[in-house]
Length: 294
Ligand SMILES: *[C@@H]1O[C@H](CO)[C@@H](O)[C@H](O)[C@H]1NC(C)=O
Ligand SMILES: *[C@@H]1O[C@H](CO)[C@@H](O)[C@H](O)[C@H]1NC(C)=O
Image 1 (tube, rainbow, N blue to C red):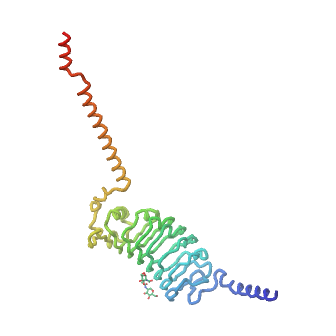
Image 2 (cartoon, rainbow, N blue to C red):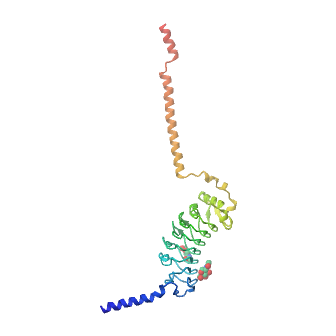
Image 3 (cartoon, helix red, strand yellow):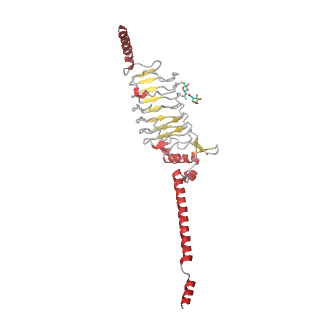
Protein backbone atom coordinates (compact mmCIF):
# COMPACT_ATOMS: atom_id res chain seq x y z
CA UNK A 1 0.00 0.00 0.00
CA UNK A 2 2.72 2.56 0.84
CA UNK A 3 4.29 1.81 -2.49
CA UNK A 4 1.05 2.57 -4.34
CA UNK A 5 0.72 5.76 -2.36
CA UNK A 6 4.23 6.83 -3.28
CA UNK A 7 3.46 6.03 -6.88
CA UNK A 8 0.31 8.16 -6.79
CA UNK A 9 2.26 10.99 -5.19
CA UNK A 10 4.88 10.75 -7.89
CA UNK A 11 2.19 10.89 -10.57
CA UNK A 12 0.61 13.87 -8.91
CA UNK A 13 3.96 15.60 -8.76
CA UNK A 14 4.67 15.07 -12.44
CA UNK A 15 1.17 16.31 -13.22
CA UNK A 16 1.86 19.43 -11.16
CA UNK A 17 5.13 19.86 -13.00
CA UNK A 18 3.28 19.71 -16.30
CA UNK A 19 0.64 22.19 -15.22
CA UNK A 20 2.59 25.38 -15.77
CA UNK A 21 3.50 24.11 -19.23
CA UNK A 22 -0.10 23.45 -20.17
CA UNK A 23 -1.48 26.57 -18.54
CA UNK A 24 -2.43 29.23 -21.08
CA UNK A 25 0.09 31.88 -21.94
CA UNK A 26 3.08 30.16 -20.37
CA UNK A 27 6.10 28.20 -21.47
CA UNK A 28 7.75 28.07 -24.83
CA UNK A 29 8.91 24.89 -26.63
CA UNK A 30 12.65 24.38 -26.35
CA UNK A 31 14.53 26.11 -29.14
CA UNK A 32 11.59 28.27 -30.18
CA UNK A 33 11.03 31.94 -29.49
CA UNK A 34 7.81 33.22 -28.01
CA UNK A 35 7.84 36.82 -29.04
CA UNK A 36 4.50 37.68 -27.48
CA UNK A 37 2.01 35.72 -25.38
CA UNK A 38 0.21 34.35 -28.44
CA UNK A 39 3.06 33.80 -30.90
CA UNK A 40 5.43 30.84 -31.13
CA UNK A 41 8.27 31.13 -33.61
CA UNK A 42 10.11 27.88 -34.46
CA UNK A 43 11.36 28.79 -37.94
CA UNK A 44 14.51 27.32 -39.47
CA UNK A 45 15.43 24.97 -36.60
CA UNK A 46 15.75 21.73 -38.57
CA UNK A 47 12.84 20.29 -36.58
CA UNK A 48 11.71 16.78 -37.71
CA UNK A 49 8.19 17.21 -36.25
CA UNK A 50 5.92 19.78 -34.69
CA UNK A 51 7.25 20.49 -31.19
CA UNK A 52 5.02 19.42 -28.31
CA UNK A 53 3.72 21.54 -25.52
CA UNK A 54 2.90 24.89 -26.96
CA UNK A 55 0.85 27.23 -24.86
CA UNK A 56 -2.66 25.98 -25.58
CA UNK A 57 -3.87 29.44 -26.49
CA UNK A 58 -1.25 29.99 -29.21
CA UNK A 59 -2.72 32.03 -32.06
CA UNK A 60 0.22 32.42 -34.37
CA UNK A 61 2.56 29.51 -35.02
CA UNK A 62 5.56 29.79 -37.31
CA UNK A 63 7.27 26.50 -38.17
CA UNK A 64 8.52 27.38 -41.67
CA UNK A 65 11.88 26.05 -42.86
CA UNK A 66 11.96 22.77 -40.94
CA UNK A 67 11.80 19.09 -41.99
CA UNK A 68 8.33 18.34 -40.63
CA UNK A 69 6.59 15.48 -42.50
CA UNK A 70 3.15 15.62 -40.91
CA UNK A 71 0.62 17.87 -39.28
CA UNK A 72 -0.53 15.73 -36.33
CA UNK A 73 -4.13 14.62 -36.83
CA UNK A 74 -5.25 15.97 -33.44
CA UNK A 75 -3.29 19.20 -33.76
CA UNK A 76 -6.27 21.55 -34.02
CA UNK A 77 -8.10 19.75 -31.25
CA UNK A 78 -5.45 21.10 -28.89
CA UNK A 79 -4.68 24.36 -30.63
CA UNK A 80 -8.16 25.46 -31.65
CA UNK A 81 -7.27 29.15 -31.14
CA UNK A 82 -4.77 29.15 -34.00
CA UNK A 83 -5.42 31.94 -36.45
CA UNK A 84 -2.14 31.94 -38.35
CA UNK A 85 -0.14 28.84 -39.28
CA UNK A 86 3.02 29.17 -41.35
CA UNK A 87 4.05 25.67 -42.45
CA UNK A 88 5.99 26.85 -45.48
CA UNK A 89 9.09 24.98 -46.64
CA UNK A 90 8.71 21.67 -44.81
CA UNK A 91 8.39 18.05 -45.98
CA UNK A 92 4.65 17.43 -45.83
CA UNK A 93 3.61 14.68 -48.26
CA UNK A 94 -0.03 14.40 -47.39
CA UNK A 95 -2.73 15.83 -45.16
CA UNK A 96 -4.58 13.40 -42.93
CA UNK A 97 -8.34 13.39 -43.25
CA UNK A 98 -9.96 15.53 -40.58
CA UNK A 99 -6.77 17.37 -39.61
CA UNK A 100 -8.55 20.72 -39.84
CA UNK A 101 -11.74 19.67 -38.09
CA UNK A 102 -11.00 21.82 -35.02
CA UNK A 103 -9.60 24.76 -36.94
CA UNK A 104 -12.61 27.04 -36.66
CA UNK A 105 -10.50 30.18 -36.15
CA UNK A 106 -7.75 29.55 -38.69
CA UNK A 107 -7.52 32.44 -41.15
CA UNK A 108 -4.07 32.08 -42.71
CA UNK A 109 -2.48 28.79 -43.77
CA UNK A 110 0.77 28.61 -45.70
CA UNK A 111 1.65 25.11 -46.93
CA UNK A 112 3.82 26.30 -49.82
CA UNK A 113 7.17 24.65 -50.57
CA UNK A 114 6.15 21.25 -49.26
CA UNK A 115 5.83 17.91 -51.01
CA UNK A 116 2.05 17.49 -51.23
CA UNK A 117 0.87 15.42 -54.21
CA UNK A 118 -2.89 15.01 -53.68
CA UNK A 119 -5.71 16.96 -52.05
CA UNK A 120 -8.64 14.74 -51.15
CA UNK A 121 -12.31 15.64 -50.73
CA UNK A 122 -12.84 17.95 -47.78
CA UNK A 123 -9.10 18.24 -47.09
CA UNK A 124 -9.71 21.52 -45.23
CA UNK A 125 -13.18 20.72 -43.94
CA UNK A 126 -14.28 22.95 -41.04
CA UNK A 127 -11.74 25.70 -41.77
CA UNK A 128 -14.67 27.98 -42.49
CA UNK A 129 -12.80 31.17 -41.56
CA UNK A 130 -9.77 30.51 -43.72
CA UNK A 131 -9.01 33.62 -45.78
CA UNK A 132 -5.69 32.75 -47.39
CA UNK A 133 -4.46 29.29 -48.37
CA UNK A 134 -1.16 28.80 -50.12
CA UNK A 135 -0.36 25.46 -51.72
CA UNK A 136 2.18 26.94 -54.12
CA UNK A 137 5.39 25.10 -55.00
CA UNK A 138 4.26 21.64 -54.00
CA UNK A 139 4.06 18.60 -56.22
CA UNK A 140 0.28 18.50 -56.61
CA UNK A 141 -0.95 16.26 -59.42
CA UNK A 142 -4.53 15.87 -58.23
CA UNK A 143 -7.02 18.17 -56.54
CA UNK A 144 -10.38 16.57 -55.75
CA UNK A 145 -13.38 18.55 -56.95
CA UNK A 146 -14.56 18.71 -53.32
CA UNK A 147 -11.11 19.56 -51.90
CA UNK A 148 -12.08 23.12 -50.95
CA UNK A 149 -15.60 22.49 -49.70
CA UNK A 150 -16.64 24.50 -46.60
CA UNK A 151 -13.99 27.18 -47.30
CA UNK A 152 -16.64 29.83 -47.41
CA UNK A 153 -14.40 32.76 -46.46
CA UNK A 154 -11.43 31.88 -48.65
CA UNK A 155 -10.30 34.91 -50.63
CA UNK A 156 -6.82 33.94 -51.77
CA UNK A 157 -5.86 30.52 -53.14
CA UNK A 158 -2.40 29.77 -54.50
CA UNK A 159 -1.98 26.64 -56.61
CA UNK A 160 0.90 27.96 -58.72
CA UNK A 161 4.05 25.95 -59.43
CA UNK A 162 2.62 22.50 -58.99
CA UNK A 163 2.26 19.55 -61.31
CA UNK A 164 -1.40 19.98 -62.26
CA UNK A 165 -2.59 18.78 -65.68
CA UNK A 166 -6.22 19.52 -64.96
CA UNK A 167 -8.47 21.02 -62.31
CA UNK A 168 -12.21 20.62 -61.94
CA UNK A 169 -14.09 23.91 -62.15
CA UNK A 170 -16.35 22.52 -59.40
CA UNK A 171 -13.43 22.85 -56.96
CA UNK A 172 -13.28 26.60 -57.67
CA UNK A 173 -17.04 27.11 -57.77
CA UNK A 174 -17.12 25.89 -54.16
CA UNK A 175 -15.36 29.12 -53.11
CA UNK A 176 -17.93 31.93 -52.92
CA UNK A 177 -15.52 34.56 -51.52
CA UNK A 178 -12.59 33.86 -53.86
CA UNK A 179 -10.86 37.03 -55.08
CA UNK A 180 -7.35 35.92 -56.04
CA UNK A 181 -6.25 32.66 -57.62
CA UNK A 182 -2.78 31.66 -58.82
CA UNK A 183 -2.71 28.89 -61.44
CA UNK A 184 0.52 29.72 -63.28
CA UNK A 185 3.49 27.37 -63.40
CA UNK A 186 1.49 24.17 -63.94
CA UNK A 187 1.77 21.79 -66.92
CA UNK A 188 -1.89 22.15 -67.98
CA UNK A 189 -3.08 19.92 -70.78
CA UNK A 190 -5.22 21.71 -73.39
CA UNK A 191 -7.84 19.00 -73.76
CA UNK A 192 -11.60 19.21 -73.54
CA UNK A 193 -11.59 19.05 -69.75
CA UNK A 194 -9.34 22.08 -69.74
CA UNK A 195 -11.86 23.87 -71.95
CA UNK A 196 -14.11 24.27 -68.87
CA UNK A 197 -11.26 25.72 -66.82
CA UNK A 198 -10.36 28.00 -69.72
CA UNK A 199 -13.93 29.37 -69.84
CA UNK A 200 -13.81 29.83 -66.08
CA UNK A 201 -10.55 31.79 -66.37
CA UNK A 202 -12.03 34.05 -69.01
CA UNK A 203 -15.13 34.70 -66.96
CA UNK A 204 -13.07 35.26 -63.80
CA UNK A 205 -10.09 37.07 -65.33
CA UNK A 206 -10.03 39.77 -62.61
CA UNK A 207 -9.32 37.04 -60.05
CA UNK A 208 -6.09 36.02 -61.78
CA UNK A 209 -3.50 38.54 -60.57
CA UNK A 210 -1.47 38.29 -63.76
CA UNK A 211 -4.33 37.54 -66.11
CA UNK A 212 -3.51 34.67 -68.41
CA UNK A 213 0.20 35.62 -68.36
CA UNK A 214 2.47 32.77 -67.42
CA UNK A 215 -0.27 30.17 -67.86
CA UNK A 216 0.41 27.68 -70.63
CA UNK A 217 -1.06 24.42 -71.71
CA UNK A 218 0.32 21.69 -73.92
CA UNK A 219 -1.49 19.84 -76.67
CA UNK A 220 -2.33 16.22 -75.85
CA UNK A 221 -0.24 14.69 -78.63
CA UNK A 222 2.47 17.29 -78.99
CA UNK A 223 5.11 18.60 -76.66
CA UNK A 224 4.56 22.23 -77.58
CA UNK A 225 3.34 24.56 -74.86
CA UNK A 226 0.88 27.22 -75.86
CA UNK A 227 0.44 30.45 -73.90
CA UNK A 228 -3.23 30.78 -72.99
CA UNK A 229 -3.33 34.25 -74.51
CA UNK A 230 -3.05 32.62 -77.93
CA UNK A 231 -6.17 30.57 -77.31
CA UNK A 232 -9.81 31.54 -77.54
CA UNK A 233 -13.11 29.76 -76.96
CA UNK A 234 -12.95 28.85 -80.64
CA UNK A 235 -9.79 26.81 -79.99
CA UNK A 236 -11.96 24.43 -78.03
CA UNK A 237 -14.89 24.46 -80.46
CA UNK A 238 -14.41 20.75 -81.12
CA UNK A 239 -15.15 20.12 -77.46
CA UNK A 240 -18.62 21.68 -77.75
CA UNK A 241 -19.56 18.53 -79.65
CA UNK A 242 -17.85 16.12 -77.35
CA UNK A 243 -20.50 13.91 -75.84
CA UNK A 244 -21.02 12.64 -72.39
CA UNK A 245 -21.91 9.00 -71.90
CA UNK A 246 -25.58 9.86 -71.31
CA UNK A 247 -25.70 11.95 -74.49
CA UNK A 248 -24.21 9.04 -76.35
CA UNK A 249 -26.70 6.63 -74.81
CA UNK A 250 -29.64 8.85 -75.73
CA UNK A 251 -28.41 9.21 -79.29
CA UNK A 252 -27.76 5.50 -79.75
CA UNK A 253 -31.08 4.67 -78.15
CA UNK A 254 -33.04 7.15 -80.22
CA UNK A 255 -31.20 5.88 -83.32
CA UNK A 256 -32.31 2.35 -82.53
CA UNK A 257 -35.84 3.56 -81.85
CA UNK A 258 -35.93 5.40 -85.16
CA UNK A 259 -34.67 2.33 -87.03
CA UNK A 260 -37.27 0.11 -85.39
CA UNK A 261 -39.98 2.63 -86.24
CA UNK A 262 -38.71 2.76 -89.82
CA UNK A 263 -38.73 -1.02 -90.14
CA UNK A 264 -42.23 -1.30 -88.68
CA UNK A 265 -43.61 1.44 -90.87
CA UNK A 266 -42.03 -0.01 -94.01
CA UNK A 267 -43.53 -3.42 -93.13
CA UNK A 268 -46.86 -1.73 -92.68
CA UNK A 269 -46.55 0.12 -95.98
CA UNK A 270 -45.47 -3.04 -97.79
CA UNK A 271 -48.45 -4.91 -96.33
CA UNK A 272 -50.82 -2.14 -97.34
CA UNK A 273 -49.42 -2.05 -100.87
CA UNK A 274 -49.64 -5.83 -101.13
CA UNK A 275 -53.15 -5.73 -99.77
CA UNK A 276 -54.17 -3.18 -102.36
CA UNK A 277 -52.66 -5.34 -105.06
CA UNK A 278 -54.23 -8.57 -103.84
CA UNK A 279 -57.48 -7.76 -102.10
CA UNK A 280 -58.75 -4.76 -104.02
CA UNK A 281 -60.94 -6.07 -106.84
CA UNK A 282 -59.26 -5.43 -110.18
CA UNK A 283 -61.17 -2.87 -112.24
CA UNK A 284 -60.67 -4.87 -115.46
CA UNK A 285 -61.95 -8.05 -113.85
CA UNK A 286 -64.96 -6.18 -112.53
CA UNK A 287 -65.67 -4.85 -115.99
CA UNK A 288 -65.32 -8.33 -117.43
CA UNK A 289 -67.66 -9.65 -114.75
CA UNK A 290 -70.19 -7.00 -115.64
CA UNK A 291 -69.85 -7.93 -119.30
CA UNK A 292 -70.47 -11.57 -118.50
CA UNK A 293 -73.57 -10.63 -116.52
CA UNK A 294 -74.87 -8.77 -119.50
C1 LIG B 1 13.80 26.30 -46.77
O1 LIG B 1 14.38 26.19 -45.50
C2 LIG B 1 15.77 25.94 -45.53
C3 LIG B 1 16.24 25.70 -44.11
O2 LIG B 1 15.85 26.71 -43.25
C4 LIG B 1 16.46 27.14 -46.20
O3 LIG B 1 17.86 26.91 -46.28
C5 LIG B 1 15.90 27.31 -47.60
O4 LIG B 1 16.46 28.45 -48.22
C6 LIG B 1 14.39 27.47 -47.53
N1 LIG B 1 13.85 27.46 -48.88
C7 LIG B 1 12.85 28.29 -49.27
C8 LIG B 1 12.39 28.14 -50.66
O5 LIG B 1 12.38 29.13 -48.54
C1 LIG C 1 9.77 15.34 -52.17
O1 LIG C 1 9.50 14.09 -52.76
C2 LIG C 1 10.44 13.72 -53.72
C3 LIG C 1 9.97 12.44 -54.36
O2 LIG C 1 9.08 11.74 -53.58
C4 LIG C 1 11.81 13.59 -53.05
O3 LIG C 1 12.77 13.26 -54.00
C5 LIG C 1 12.17 14.92 -52.40
O4 LIG C 1 13.39 14.80 -51.70
C6 LIG C 1 11.10 15.35 -51.46
N1 LIG C 1 11.42 16.67 -50.97
C7 LIG C 1 11.27 17.01 -49.71
C8 LIG C 1 11.60 18.43 -49.39
O5 LIG C 1 10.91 16.22 -48.85
